Image (cartoon, rainbow, N blue to C red; front, side):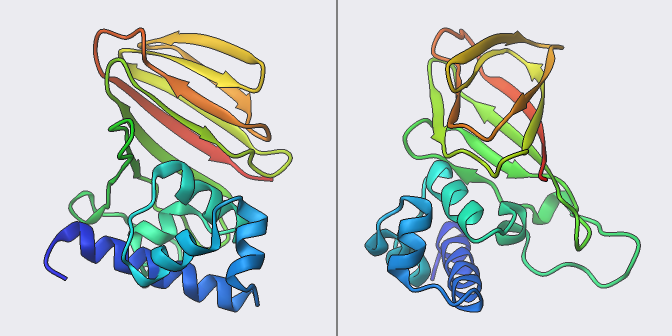
Length: 192
């Protein structure tokens, strides 16, 4: 493969396939759990297609694997400290919205937290994302711009400096269609 995106797609595909097989799931069984077609999962596993952020989120939730683990690759050796180097972090770009997701946390084994950086262009929205497991909470902080967070039937407009916490066990999305500029959001995903 010749480009960084191709290499990243292949790496993600291998990790998804490995985890699916570890769980003893067929392509159809995983498709049923995550709502993504078996053919798309097969293409992803072979590295022939790149998933959207929403598709990747649905798959990683179904296989109970943090998205950061797919993007960061193997953890550094060591016990008490885990470092995620900025120069080595992958960025996933949603083809539809142009939103960029970057897992910026350096989760230790067994951690149930993810730290995510989202950049959402003006006049775009990203999602909907599938409901997370019951009890999952997303803590959000808007560092730049403004964005409307929509969780089920509830929404809240957030501007730079605003923070909120949301029960994320319901479909949700982030909306910047009314925004004149890019929104930068930091999210801590707290899993049960």
